[in-house]
Length: 475
Image 1 (cartoon, one colour):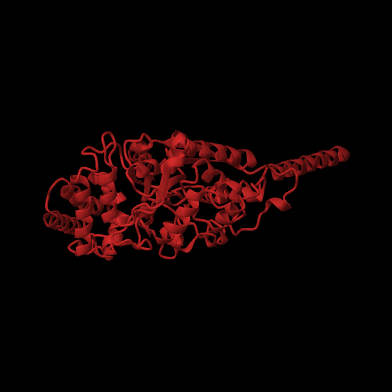
Image 2 (cartoon, rainbow, N blue to C red; image 1 turned 180 degrees about the vertical axis):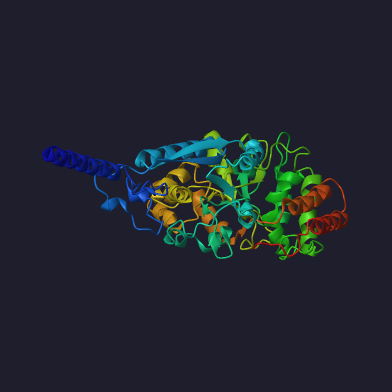
């Protein structure tokens, strides 16, 4: 009887030990860390660890369960087909390169973006990562709609940015997005063959507004307009920012957003330039395409056109047979001084949603795609026909060793003669830009310059008052 009792207690003790070991082996320590970054295991080589935490995976036993896989939603605006393809390619490469994170890419058409984003935010289903242009960063940061990246990314990744571009993504002492590219809003393209036919030197594009008007008259003939730029308030609202700086030295509102600042000789000269160009007949009475679309120039319907740097990508993809006759230059200035601004630097970034549950993983993906191995971004700039430009020093350095990039005359001209003198896009509400651009359009259509500017001044001041805008500049 005693022997049986002893054997029973021994068996029971053995069972308890086995159960305890089983519980321990099943992860009883709670080590399912959903914040594990790619750098802790199976990480992309170009995505350095930036969490600031020591990795526990190195000390785990081979029998430990892998970290739970995290799926992140990434929404990108629909751009050119080459850009869409680039996103798909490198999201795929990232997903293949490690096991802990999967990026689900959705490309959203521009006309559906706002509605789709608002609906997702209202439902608590906003994407973890989104494309965001520079002009929207400060206000989104102020509202808490996007997260600061300082504690999520390696600080040296921001040291790689050019100083003026750092300011584009900074609010206070925090970085709220990582830039992908910069692109000047204003570049002058001209047809060298048509210059020759008109008796103009094809190597000497106009450098003053007066010369633009003079050349435009000589170049205008049946079926060809001498000059084209934005004509409606929507396009003028953003395409004229660089020329506003050029003529007046500032934008049409004070820095503290307290009142309009438009009644000056510089802005009068600007409106007179647009009005004269339109009324002289060197421009079409109806805009042939939106400002961002330079197709009419490629088709030979316009001898000189003002568009963004992205237009070169269009020409290289769709009008290869015309490239030898396409000249490129900085837009002419009010007085011929081409060290003055003629363009603003637009561009796109990636930002993390303010309510993302997986901010660290999202930051690791951004570090990989935009801030990692320069070859990823060089691939992008090549696919865009070098019509867009890098905000990163290391990428530009790497491109000097790339035979295609180093010999590209267009890229070199823009990088040397336009970008260094360009300004950031304004961050005040669009209503101010639209009020001023309405004045430009009104002057083009025959309203006196003084009357058009007076209405812009009133409209801007009324908007400031109604929206309590004064003193709210987040920068």
